Length: 458
Image 1 (cartoon, rainbow, N blue to C red):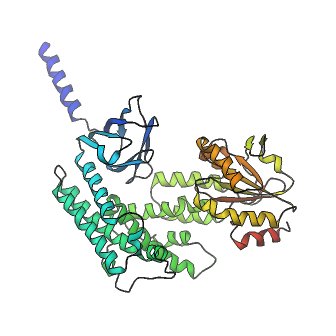
Image 2: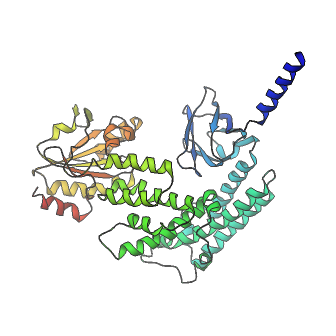
Image 3: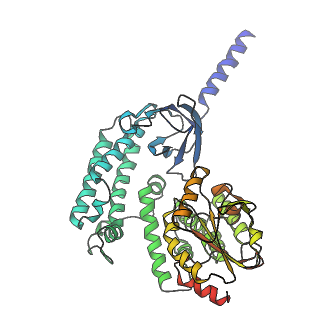
């Protein structure tokens, strides 16, 4: 009997050892941290986000159920690139006041992460500070990008502890990164060199001519390759949409990509085209039907369906999502229902949002133009609580008019979620009964806003 039990125990031990590991361990210590948490974001899988709590001494540890790929460990302004795979057990340690000189990444599976840190540093070194690199002429710019690629490739090939398989994938990724930087040169050079309408010479992008845009393995590995593929198909869609004013590029994109054989590429491009843009369009039905016709990813389909179910309730004439007792800059609180009786033009914004601030002069101009008319201008700040003082200061400094209120829970406010707001600024127009005229009103800087007001005889 004793031998039988020993045999069973031995089998149990072997079975435990053979169980596949589907997690990674991460630990470490961040000294001089002024917050009690760090956040791990996925860059390969952009849906991944894990908040990790720091102990009083800055130490932390967590068990992560992940898919192998690249991540960013973010603590305030400190960003550490990491590569994690199941079975890894890595430790990340640094001084929050001096990340560059104090960072140490050790443990099982840390070799790739250390390469990524060195790769990032080398790229920053050769790119130079600021945006001066984008003012270079074509030959100098291309030489700089080639030098970065070559230096990073040397780092890769000389790094120990990295598999040949990873090195092969990463070598291609470095080439894609080089091509992506060439691809963005036209737009960046036009802006930073102040050359409006600039276009690179005909042969500047000739290296992209031989690029295969249907490599699923590289698409899953390389964010640079994803960017090139997205740009390629988006340009095709834009050419078609530009010839037809009665459509949107992202809707055309769904038709352009429908014949892509690689599921990962087709599904990702479809999701990227719809998940953000559908919330800023009055063509919700077109987006949803077009997406469902090309997507075979069950998880994506469920998410887009959930979005559709919200957005289809935001059509013209539907009751607006409400907010109750938001702090009013002028004193007291304000609820959306308090503003019934007039049209309400809503600006959802934040003090940190550059495009929001850029609209302020136009908003003030429109407010002045319609002063005393049957319309109320409402600005809803979704700033974090820590920026409450900044919100009040900016209203005073910029002499903002209208009704200024502070949302109760920034991005997680029920009002924001009710409109499925994915980005700001966001403009909404309600009628005097509190019903939606449009959940995607024109910006103040858009002449179509005044045209809309005139149509409504405001």
